[in-house]
Image (cartoon, rainbow, N blue to C red; front, side):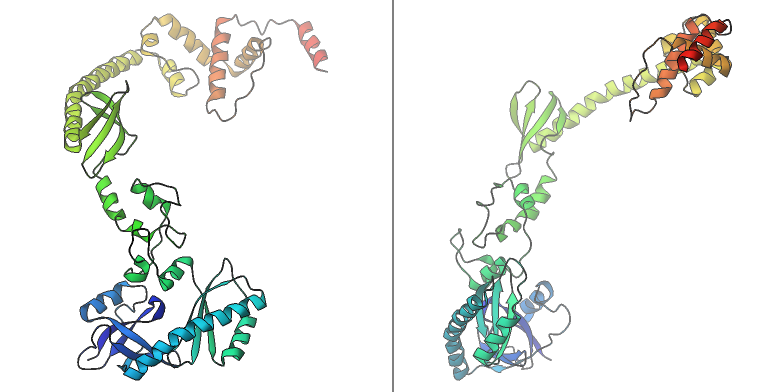
Length: 406
């Protein structure tokens, strides 16, 4: 049964292969593996259970499927000597390719060049702000190196991973040393950790946000779920207080009262105070609910004494709602409201025209629901207070109105 091994190549490039030997090769041992149209040289990076775990979780892994290629044999001393000679040739190939890029007038930056171990293929890695038409460049390089040419466009983070370097922490780049995948990092991650939002202070050598911002983000998210949200108003034993800051490491919360007094309280004490405030406020809420129920019963009894016409008037929302005080006032107001509710449509139109003839026309307020209903209720109430003499109007006045209209 074959063994699963992970092999590392130049530029921190890693791939998985199957090994048909009885025992897997030792770590850091040189091996010759199958490559694209040839063979390549690499060193064993992981074997056994570690290789299986990385194969399922890494971006360059193959999951549960077996790897498509095999490791052929262990490298000999001559193989390792030839690999050392390719290191100097890679740099010469990169410089020569840069000259051809300038000659073709292409806006691109050649990052690295990598010869395959059998020298059948030369891979060039470059970065660019946009897509580049490098077909002419490929023809020139193929005629120059007499080999197969492959150009790959990578990002700035992949560039830092291939070249390596030392970060501001004094250690080698995580992407070049151990980080298997380059996960996206945004300002929201720094905001959750209360870090500076200045990109210059939280960016790495590649110009992007540092990969290490992702390491503790899950811890901050899980810890903040136990704390109240900053800016929220809490009701404690001292009244209403606003959450100013949360210290998840010391489990403390900074609160500020309405008067501006600030205090720092432990998270456990804050929860106890909030529970006590809710318990003390329960009796007040129950008393308020009881008084509200009694008021609702009294109001229902008073509304039941009204005439059916008045009740229908309230149901159709043509008039303003009666309050409890208006409902228990005398029957005189009820009769006036009932007369206004049962008047004929012709009389209502005449009264409305007489009441609103001398009044200035209100400007319609768009976007307010129920505006016309409230104005109609107000006009009908005014019309009910004036004498209904629309039928006794002078014909001369009507003719005069018609002349003015013409």
